Image (cartoon, rainbow, N blue to C red; front, side):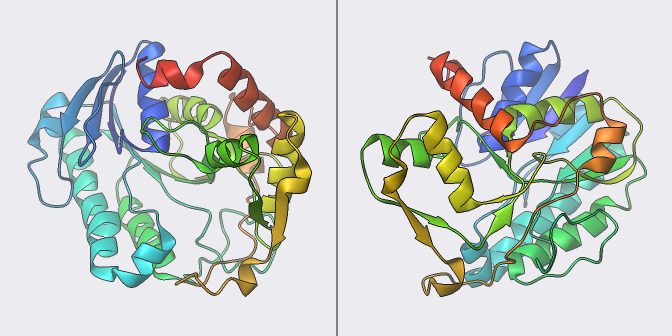
Length: 301
């Protein structure tokens, strides 16, 4: 299967590109500001906002998986023009590429499109933009929804970063292994999924005929503090280093966040053969991959 994956220098895009190529797919991996080499992939520098996207159309991908986005909630809040260009404008241009190439289009959205007043949000619930990031993603979902062969995937993921920077789980590892005090929110709930597990689900979704919105996340729900406690337990770190912190009392945040972004994944479980791991099982796999040197292979070392 020919795949164009945008945002290949990001956490999900990098893992997805690598795992897709390892599975034998023909991958065109798009990046913008952070050029990189991913084993088995053809990398291509693209400006999705205003650059020439004809190479994507010429590649004639069977499926486009659009991972590229501006995901910093606070940057989106303070630089709204940039957020709209990247999250809405670029998505519109990618959707046009999919139309012209007759490609299936999978759009990676977010769990932040709800008001967070309840647990385990379902696909059919009314979306609510509590911040500008959510507003851009809701509008991008609407644009993608006009494409006749599409899937909108709402999720929240962690894993190994292909760049020299830390994802949330890697940040936890770095802080706790150094013996540093580590703050974690007690009042923010989510359903995190390991990027490797999510990638497997996306590759299956790329080859089926589902059209619509799907929640693909970890099975279960926990606070970031509970996630950090579980992480410390599995890696045998001192959990006393974890500092319970309330997101609601943190004055440095520029944007309002929903307090509960947990997702109901029952629809995805019925549709997909790929098992969606529970949060503990996902972290156990993260630990095994860490011990097996997966991050080094991902980064081409």
